[in-house]
Amino acid sequence: MIIKPKFRGFICTTSHPVGCEYNVRQQAEYVKKQKRIDGAKKVLVIGASTGYGLSSRIAAAFGCGAATIGLFFEKPASGNRTASAGWYNSAAFEKIAKEEGLYAKSINGDAFSNEIKQQTIELIKKDLGRIDMVIYSLASPRRTHPETGEVFNSVLKPIGSQYTSKTVDFHTGKVEEITIEPADDEEIRQTVAVMGGEDWEMWMAALKSADVLEENAVALAYSYVGPEMTHAVYREGTIGRAKDDLEAAAFKITDRLKDVGCRAFVSINKAVVTQASAAIPVISLYVSILFKVMKEKNTHEGCIEQMYRMLEDRVYSGDMKLDSKGRICMDDWEMAESVQSEVSGLWDKAGNDNIADIADVEGYRAEFFKLFGFGFAAVDYSADVEIDVKIDSIE
Image 1: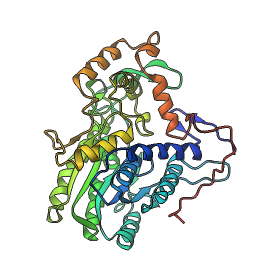
Image 2 (image 1 turned 135 degrees about the vertical axis):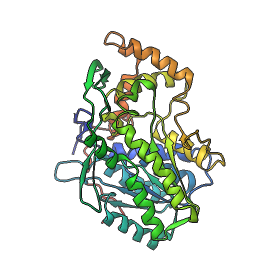
Image 3 (image 1 turned 30 degrees about the vertical axis):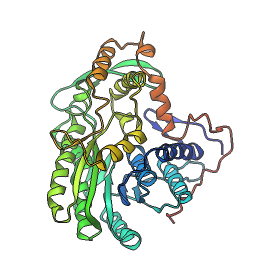
Image 4 (image 1 turned 60 degrees about the vertical axis):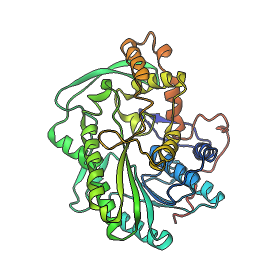
């Protein structure tokens, strides 16, 4: 089958298996060229198929030499429909890990469910005994509560008042004004239930109860703060309320697992193009401007550079460089005053007459399609490829 990118807004409805493998292989090669990390050896990644979760798994495997178990909820190919990008990414990861002699197994299912938690625990006991790192990187729009059965749906909305700002359509390069109505209390509650810390706490409690955590294991989850210009729709909006809950969960987990020495941290990561971030209004304009500024300053990082630096320079360096709220700050280069002052000035000027000059919209768009395996010069997209790709460890 010859596969071309088909998209609808911030979703690409096709993905390319060869392109996805190329993307994963490039990330693995980047890590292999860096300094070896004396860190985790047995890692569970919850949300391991795309974005920061995938890059975390790659960094742990090829940077630390870790055995990894990856959890995700992805679709295999069916008929003439390609598999999801996350499926192809995970198949590629296992293939490359096997080439390097690394243990890698995956579980496909609803990580919010008790059934997947138990299946994961059984696999850990059977193959690894105990794990020394847990990375929690789920980005789902909905969650079914494993105890009550209630279905929660998240929303991307401001809180308190209507929000109007500008954004850019990264497909057309057109700058537009966008208005978002505020969330009500029920929408806030449901967003926190999906994206907050409850499920992370449930995971860590289940792992401890099953005695599959090594002493002094580390647990990590990911968040974002960003600049003032995006706070209304992000940090002070429904997502931000959920992230506050996630960050509070780190302290609860550390306290509840102190008898086994487990410590939980939230890493505040840099703005990048992911399937999750592409859905957030306003972020596309900010990130496009940020990319231009940081590339010019030679401080730009993608997911893999961030995750390698997080493990090497923070988690396993002997100094996590925590901020006043106890968080790992991987957004330090993004939030540098020299970067933010320039971004802010360009943001104020941004319009249809100058957007191509002051923002890297093309770079943003290219990164978006690379998430789905498209746009790599080394891949022949005119070639007929097999879309039914198996993940070795999934029957």
